[in-house]
Image (spheres, helix red, strand yellow):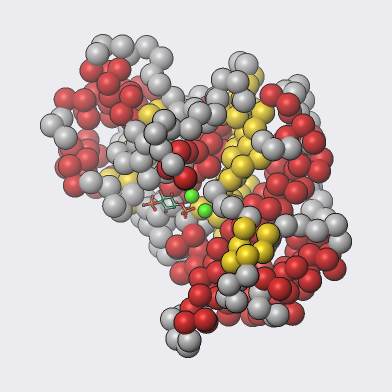
Amino acid sequence: MSALLKSLVGASEKSARIAQLCRQEEALFQLLIEEKTGTDKNKKFVQDFKTLADVLIQEVIKHDVGKEFPELHGHICGEESNKFENSLGETLVVQVCTTQRDTASLLFKILDRNQPAAELLAAAIHQEVVLQDPALDTVALAIPPERLAIWIDPIDSTNQYIRGQASVAPIGGICPSGLRSALVLIGAYDRSSGDPVLGVINEPFFREDPLTHRWQGVYHWGVSYQGTSLCSLSRPPLRPEPSVVLSRSETPAIQRVLRPLYGERLLFASGAGYKMLCVILGLAEAYVLSEGSTFKWDSCAPHAILRALGGGMVDLEAALQAWRAGQRGALPELTYSQPAGGAVGAERWANRGGLVAFMHREHLEVVLATLATAAL
Ligand code: 2IP
Ligand code: CA
Ligand code: CA
């Protein structure tokens, strides 16, 4: 199990390096930021490249983890499809090849014959990541990989990743926007129960080195399985003046109802994963989302870490229903193995009832009691 945890952390590190590289290397950066000038073909190409960063990272994780754990083959899924249409209208399958050279020639085709970009990416994809983390080496856990499946969001908060604002001043410790909210999310869940088991969150843009202007990242992990909880972080306390973090597009009705509870400590941030991370780090007591705009790949990793620290993530609609019916014991947490009935495409994996991410059960109860009695 610790081998799987290490493999997922290693894959998140490689992913973070690819995400950083696309912003740092001129040949790649130009593709990422180029604006709507030029021909339609150019426009399409730029659009393609933005997706390519996501698709590539997902394929790298699938490849590296799948190679080490054949039991997981067919059970590593994510937001992206690996079919990719280039600007010439050719459909190509993005994959990690056996050698760096083969990967580079595949990328050369995908990237409209841009050799420097193809070579830089191929080198990053085939690099060996050596983790230097003694804490990880001491983790001893026995969870058979064949009981697990994996959800990946290769880059969450893509919009902020593309926009790339480096230094956005935090409000109440939380960055409202900017590169900080772009995260790599890798979560494992129990195939039969659907419960989240293991989560890795990597922050590729944690800190910019003032001298080299290179990005430095940081990762966090947590495991919660059959009564055993382990985490790279410690449980934050419930603060006397709690705060909540919301999406900027959260409904006015929810904002109005929560305002009296939090006052000035009603905070806003981009990125679903980042808002969950804020709860994990104790920068917010809750993340409330009333709409079905997140997916299993957004919540699985943060949810596993929250559980490892004694928190959780409930389905808001189902939790409110249970609360109103007086069933206030075990509130319905999100699960990860079943698609939503009657939905198609990505919608099958949406957290359709919205969610509340929380660290302290008593605070979740305050949120639910407030929302349950309000006219929404
Ligand atoms: C998005 C991203 C958005 C979030 C949305 C996610 O994932 O995290 O930022 O919206 O829910 O699905 P918001 O920022 O309003 O919370 P992606 O960037 O991977 O599409
Ligand atoms: Ca996402
Ligand atoms: Ca994404």
